[in-house]
Length: 85
Image (tube, rainbow, N blue to C red; front, top):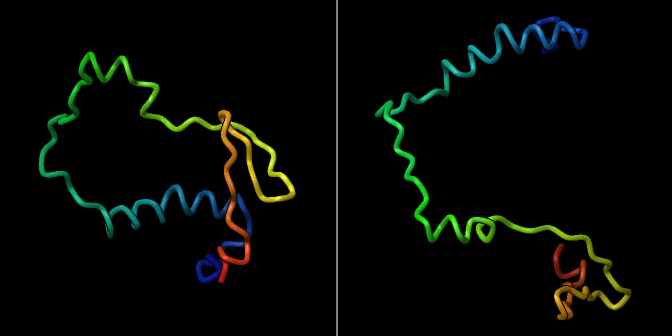
């Protein structure tokens, strides 16, 4: 944006909304082969297990020995040195 002499946040937002997005879409946009909606509805069995398909998050504390207790099980976390070497 410095090449366009844009110095403020307001100018940057105007440039992005009015120019950049249009140019970007024109350059990288790929038209869909079909305009029909090809989504498939869920079956009754899939609806019953719907919540299973999504990840669940929970907060846990990491112990000094690198273990986490979750769902009546203890999980060992790899040491940081092994992850980054």
